[in-house]
Length: 175
Image 1 (spheres, rainbow, N blue to C red):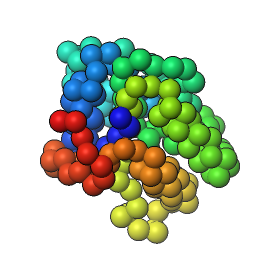
Image 2 (cartoon, rainbow, N blue to C red):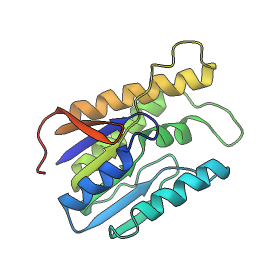
Image 3 (cartoon, one colour):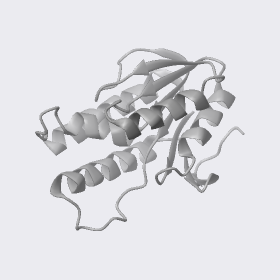
């Protein structure tokens, strides 16, 4: 089963995705995409590690690219927004070609769906911010939205989490 879990910032989507992953398989891989740069990022990483401490997850750090191998059990990819940002923006602030980033990440997520028993992907609800964003941020928002749409189309189920409450948008879940 492949599931996209989406929602706004601090909506509870990661916690829900972790609970779903625990339900799907006793063998759990966590693909972490957040770069530990800055105090806020380190705080969020620590909170997420504590959240899943008893979940039996093996963690693989991803730096803008996903591993290409077969996984047994469930893979939890948290999250698409960080993955897109790392692939789009270089350390020096330069921006990669957005269409090539989208194509590559779409292939990698599709490959992940085909190489694991179950995959739970955490996405981000983006786009409501309007068009007044900084150009680089606007490019990230557009790429994130496009990748989320492609991922949702491939997923067996899509769940939106708002204020900690999951709402099934597509498919069916085993729990």
